[in-house]
Amino acid sequence: MNDSTDKQYDIVIAGGGMIGASLALALSPLGLRIAVVEAVARGEAQQPSFDDRSTALSRSTQRMFEAMGLWDDVISAATPIRRIHVSDRGRFGFSHIDAAEQGVEALGYVVINRVLGEVLQSALAKSEAVDVMCPARVVDLDVGGDFAVAGIETDAGRHEKLCGELLVAADGANSALRPMMGICARKSDYGQHAVIGNLLPEKPLENCAYERFTDQGPLALLPVADDRAAFVWTVSSHDADRVLGLDDETFLTELQEAFGYRVGRFSRVGKRSAYSLSLSKALRLTAERGVLVGNSAHGLHPVAAQGFNLGMRDVAALCDCIADARSSNPTADLGDPDLLGRYAQWRRNDQGKLVRLTDGIVRLFGSSSPPLRAARNIGMLGFDIIPGVRSLFARHMMGLAGRLPRLSRGVPLK
Ligand SMILES: Cc1cc2nc3c(=O)[nH]c(=O)nc-3n(C[C@H](O)[C@H](O)[C@H](O)COP(=O)(O)OP(=O)(O)OC[C@H]3O[C@@H](n4cnc5c(N)ncnc54)[C@H](O)[C@@H]3O)c2cc1C
Image (cartoon, rainbow, N blue to C red; front, side):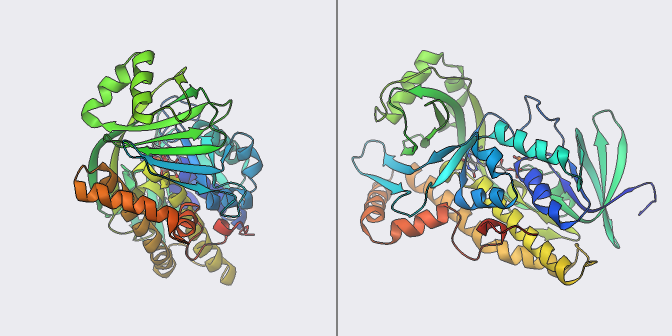
């Protein structure tokens, strides 16, 4: 199996999207040999991770990019969120979270995935620690003895074997690696699509992010560059094709009706795309010489803008476990079950909480049952008036709750 023609690495990462690329860069100061296998070429329009979506980065993700020396590049293309305004269509009440009240400069930052992708991929291209195989996909896996051996196939049809002490699946919610590792996932379809794009509101958002719950599902407006707003509009899957096919004027009229006139009239809508929404959760996070990170471990509804941020905390925790193992023993086996077990135990709570929270919000605000409608209005009221509730919630949303790994605290690994 461990043939001399095989390429040898300490860690092989399958998937070089938002999470896989970040993990490789986070690990690179540790003196490890790392391979990233990514299926879709840089700059391709169909790159599924670095696409036209905008992502709200939490404060803990910001700190990670700072510790990794990438924040100056990210912030040059990011827009700060200083307020979050939450409302329920057809009700008068609303809630808000304010950066100043939480004692922070910003609650988070909005960045376009494609731009974040350029930052990460440029850094990977310069990294001496990381070899990127792209476009190539992992097609099989053989684990035993001291290595996991990933079989990869390039677009040109060439086959190679990559050996690593540890194989990381960062290949997204429909992970091909997860079943190869013998890990099952529970999945449920929300019957919703997120329609995304950007538009020009009459009044600038002034660093405020809006979340509005409607009968169809949540609708978010995020501040982005040039006074434009990125929207994430959740619609029923039955209606997604119709909504995508609307002419610009009719689309804006329907979106405006769902959102209201809080930021004036909408105009100049850009290109739109739709994403099918489902919840997925892997039943285990580790296998022999293998771990899951990011969406391969948990795919969330985007309602609370937490999927990537949660995945970045997976990255930070895995980096801590690996850095600790190698600092006490420079030849420590990175596929050691104890090391992988520490990672899994650390991540269980945070992942479980976010899965329950996002799923709970979608179900609570998606219900037309009168008792649940009453409960959510009381909830929003309580959120605003009960001391401490808002701060507690804000700390979770900023990714600052619980025991944080070094990178999530902004502390470099080396
Ligand atoms: C509409 C929408 C809005 C969102 N907004 C936010 C937000 O504001 N904040 C937030 O935190 N999260 C947000 N998310 C969630 C976030 O986008 C995901 O959590 C994040 O993209 C997960 O990154 P990932 O790298 O784990 O997976 P992916 O982004 O799916 O990347 C997987 C990568 O693996 C590659 N790949 C797949 N199979 C193979 C293979 N066999 N071999 C090699 N490579 C392979 C793919 O090409 C891809 O590059 C949003 C999601 C949606 C749908």
